[in-house]
Amino acid sequence: MAGPAFRAAAVRVRTPATSANLGPGFDALGLSLGLYDDVVVRVADAGLHIDIAGEGAQSLPRDENHLLVRALRTAFDLLGGQPRGLEVVCANRIPHGRGLGSSSAAICAGIVAARAVTIGGDTRLDDAALLELATEIEGHPDNVAACLLGGFTLAWTENGAARAIRMDPAASVVPVVFVPGAAVLTETARGLLPRTVPHVDAAANAGRAALLVEALTRRPELLLPATEDRIHQEYRQPAMPQSLALVARLREDGVPAMISGAGPTVLALVEDGAADKVARLAGEGWAANRLTLDAAGASVLPLGS
Image (tube, rainbow, N blue to C red):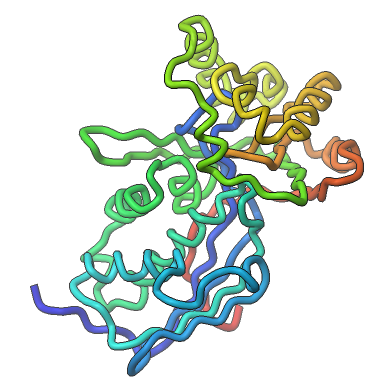
């Protein structure tokens, strides 16, 4: 296959924050949220230049170790070859290390931008291949599926390949996120999980995950029982005791609350009319934000928009 040709113009990609698990849907269910990172990528004559504003501006690497650049490079390899140089400008709004899919947003931005800047990239790397590539880089498909597809997603692997379907959440559902000041590494949170769980808990989660599909798409009044989890949240309590305490308090008040991804952010899925009241319940130490549901997923946008 001949090497690729690249567009002279820059491309802009917007990727949403995501929340995975959603209570019982461990490593399978994901939700795309209306909080976004933007990246502009342009093929240059030589070298690598990275600008970062917002989240991670003081800590992220500005070289080949940047996760977004690693995703770009991996995608370019699949597209047929590397450009001579790259200019990358990142505007980051998704908090890092909080369970809101910041790494998935970076990965998806990189592979979508690589495809967009490559002439004929859609043919060389179709949407199914994008999901498989993002999953290979991230390690599991739940966040990257929601980030790429938007909406409410169910992801799985079949014969070693990542697969996902997209559903539309009920229009009345509003996500409220409670973001703490301190981060928790995903590796730390995942390392607390046991290798096995009781059969009764696994069975309970299977039923709740099935109910959650109905609750989130058609019957939001069932979200409180549908978001009950027994197989991962409590095991992570040592890494995020305040988060689990907030989840318990909100659920006692009838609010469908859960740990977002690997935490420590708490996500509540509430009816539109209750969202502002729920956002005031967390107290000090939390940044409470009422968000929208994202329907578009990772998108290539005009530079001036």
